[in-house]
Image (cartoon, rainbow, N blue to C red; front, side):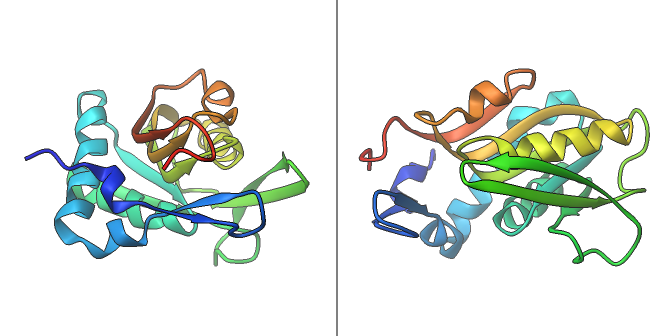
Length: 178
């Protein structure tokens, strides 16, 4: 039975600020069969590319990334903000709409030639996933794809990630699309 993932995502107008309609995945997380189906659908899309590792950025990328890694039978690598990982790290800073951000990854998380799948809950501007891809490639890994639950197609994320196979379960065409 196919899952209508859209039914498990609620729209919250005015969060975190006026003019934004937040796509809340907590109903999806609370439904075990739907959560499992989401992780399986992303894993199935990339299974033939034979990823050897899944990378996900905090915090919701941990949830879906770990689930996809389990489904594929491979390891998971967390990407975090500076100061959150205990061993030596590499980092990548990138520009946001208002300011900048930095993400880090353990320097030995990816080995040269390793096939890596990047997973997150939401594709908006693409900055987080671009940072993850940059660090994987800096360590010599090969990005085999970028999987997401949600794609806000009215934002430039997909364009920023055009060099990669981008797969999403749900697309929203506008801020008002519910």
